[in-house]
Length: 429
Image 1 (cartoon, helix red, strand yellow):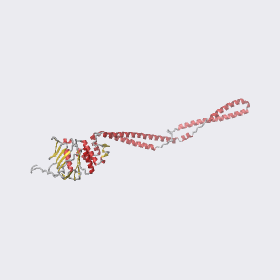
Image 2 (cartoon, rainbow, N blue to C red; image 1 turned 30 degrees about the horizontal axis):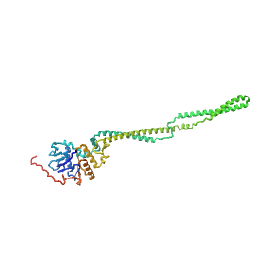
Image 3 (cartoon, helix red, strand yellow; image 1 turned 180 degrees about the vertical axis):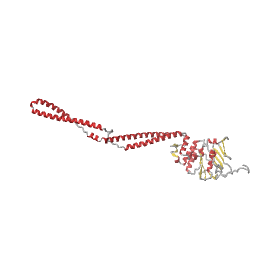
Image 4 (tube, helix red, strand yellow; image 1 turned 45 degrees about the vertical axis):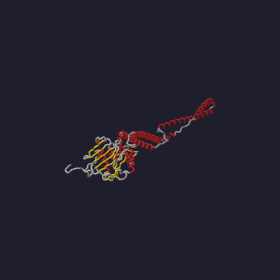
């Protein structure tokens, strides 16, 4: 059960002459008034009374007063806290009448509850660190964030290289009509020589036909001239004519191959090879670009996994407030960083963190709420009531939103107490 402030009576603390208040148990109690009337002095009385000498004002006694400060606070658990006398000694009495001291108060009073601006004015990192230490995942989240930064840096570098490789590959010329491999001049020359040799053989065969035709003609002439030798020459003629017939049939199937393309390729071999090498360079550049793109995608997967681990870590943590989180080392609420939160949300977050730090502490002190409009105050007050929390705040105002108005060190409209005069005699100290 959280402990709250039931009643405060304070005298002669800073600007306060004599003030008695009973703040609302659940919700927002606003102490209003003009400047320099003692509003903040009321909160300082509570902070000093409950927080100890670390909250003691540098000049605690009201100017012009010969009576030392007197603070009397009654807590909802029945504890009575007093500071009075020349040295403002602390006296804590529990419901059973047992005496206690500052150690007893420290068990349920959270320091930030007495000085909430200390948290609200801290840096974004300090706020986030406070929350992470509360929920006990600070070290784990730090390791994940370091891993995230490392993977992100590697991925960024790989991404730049991949972009450069893609750009380089895109700029390379490409010749779709060029062969896949560079052309060898010796291979082309050998092909040319083979074709020329084959064509030469064909030519020799054609020449052989012509030679046989001449022989046939000579034999025919000899037949005409030498009838006597007709039988022998006729037989020889038959043999030659038979050979001629075979040769003629063989010649019909002969086809000469052109060396024009090879001669052109030989003449253009360097130009062709330039295209081939350009195509190979482009293919290599595209392969390199794809390799780095694959690395980038792999690192993206790793980065997403680390970020998911961070989300899972915080999802499983017992955070002070739903939708409160830590992203990139900064506190966020409902997806917004501190400087983008509304004033009401900033107060909700701060009060929730105080409650998480010390669940028994059911109250906070808030100074100078005049920068907030009435809608914001109402929203914050309703949230406090819903959460069963108590806030005592000051505001430079005398409007209806102020439950208590301080004027010249007193509660306006309240019966003013008679100031006690110290009893002393001349010559006595």
